[in-house]
Length: 182
Image 1 (cartoon, rainbow, N blue to C red):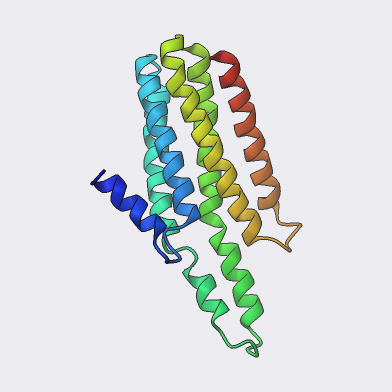
Image 2 (image 1 turned 180 degrees about the vertical axis):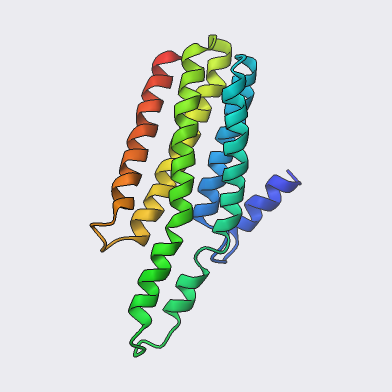
């Protein structure tokens, strides 16, 4: 294999901070949205296909944003340990770095939900692609949600932690619906 996908995978495997798990989660979600878009088009679900296209574009953009979202965390961690602002700078940077994976989880859960609806309404030959879209979207949702949890550990009252749990549950319910339909 030699092409853009191979280049993407090579970049992902390099010994560098980015791309990393956040970008991989976003790109996985984008693949799920692309499959949803195709399955929805075959199912004559035009509004779903249009929404899938928008979610795919959003997830690609989020994957790009993830390439740089952790840089402020690394910069704060390189500060001298004796610097009185270091701990707050790290906490603030981690909080901000949670924004794009949270957006990835939100988009992934929506893709999973929409794809489950397509799977439920599709003929068996078409339902397979919609089910794969659900499974990929759930993986993207859970992976991105876990990154939020890692970034926000020690902040038990942060509402984003509850939200990623709800998004993972939403994606899991979509999986159950889709698997029941296929």
